[in-house]
Length: 472
Image (cartoon, rainbow, N blue to C red):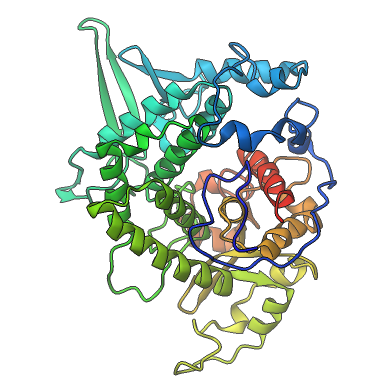
């Protein structure tokens, strides 16, 4: 079987080109150690039975819109005649309280709805990346208009001229966030976007454009409505994003070069260069764009460039970013200062740079995509989002997908424990923390982005498990 068969948890198509050949593999046994986040997919009325008809419901032409079950109950509960858990209702109530309106229309949800905090900063804004899980919830609940409004409003913001300290950003840059200023006296609403000029660290977001394309694909799959993606302004918006990330330059790698703090981990954490999160999102957005772009005079060129980039990117990531027990042993025995095309240690990684914790962390069964690979440097940290998106986008091979889940099972106490999934592991501390983060007090060990637990990625883990279980 060539390529991965599309499953309900995938928002991209695979049959346009062959990225890998699947070997016959036994079905994955999903009966793993249970934590609160896994119970949320069973005892809270959202389980695999709920997703049995996912393909027919969320494929083009399959959306009926008749499953919306009410103000605060997800559609899945009604379809399966389950009594919703009270927590589901509370979650929907909180989500609706976070809605942001522009001229009477909902256009997104704020990052945090915590009125008890004295320091709001930019948490009262609509973040592109933060709205994605909210958008998926609205789509599954039969409320696509909110998502459509968000997509069009951020697309409008993309067209703004973007200047930071007299320097003009690329046309395709999407905002990291935006807010709506209400003027009760004049009864007017004004949009204020942040492209990095106000952000902590003054770093423009690289991932916002990727999330926008992915969400446009999710909207199209959920509703069967092709008209939005086919609008000239949406086609242009995608081409502008792609023009930024597919541009040719000095880089010899197919991965995307980006600065520290340009992704979800928006604090300095030493992820500059080619971080796994950006590469996985890059891969997923390219595949989504491949199915959304028109094959007209303007789109055909991008389609050809995408196909070539996907082949190169998938080979590079699967070959050089992958780490398992065997690969770890190979790196440990690398020779350095190799020259010519026959070099095995292509990035000139010094074996002594392998941190001691990796040898204890790596099980004999399992593996993962490491955080970064660049000349003379490998970041061996575990990053949850990059690895899980790699599974959902089929960046990882079926064998690698199962190995990632095997690693999580083997290292359950370290990666999950009694809390939701850790976004990174391990946390950096002491002298390394001072050097890498610049003594950032918000990123002390086991907090925020430095090894902190993030509930959102736990449900992403459940989707990844479901995706693997549907592989042939």
